[in-house]
Image (cartoon, rainbow, N blue to C red; front, side, top):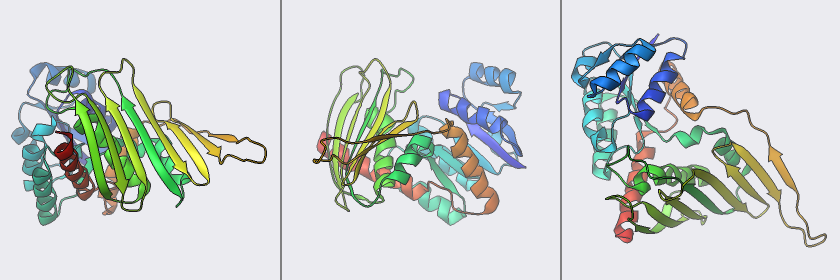
Length: 306
């Protein structure tokens, strides 16, 4: 039986909690939130023990923790958990700064603790299919991730919130690091940037472009990959993937293949693989170092976006 806890009972924290309660051989020892109403709601819905402080929960025997607090609290919260030699998954991004991320990664290594970062889109079946389909002839990747302004997110802007998914995905899909990255951004609705255009070149020569904003009235999550031999288009919300053949000058046409996928909740798969890695003593699928690379890329982006 794997004993787990959740700190932070916002939207994502409750998703983690629900999925843990649905997993075999997983016991939710307790959850933490400063808001008494949130504690009351999850206690009634899931029948779990609730605590007002992290210190109260850390007095119990735990194998793993999900950290779902605001990004500004990831560093402080993560260090407390690591000090207790408890494995943890921290929701993306790993921390507010690269310096904080480096300290978390080093501390976890020193304490022999497994640290995973919740870049959940890697577990989207559509992303997995795109990864399978692309070969060594990738030319460029374009990602659109847009939606309405989220009042619940006050501590970061759209680059660190939405853009973090795609900065990680481009590394994952290309298997390469960022050679150069540029960005422009604007602030319209809140105190942080809510629109951004990010352009990059990877070490292996692949070009990438991310369009992200909080000023679109609907949610859009799309990836387009141009290869020498094919073109791949994926909708990450509907989990639909299409593969287009190269254009034929002989008959002036191309073929389209739709890849059927079994719809799956990415967070469920993410937590399943996290727990499985802990039980088997194998590396977690998305390491602290992966999360740290995203933070370092943030800093390069903000250097040129400001």
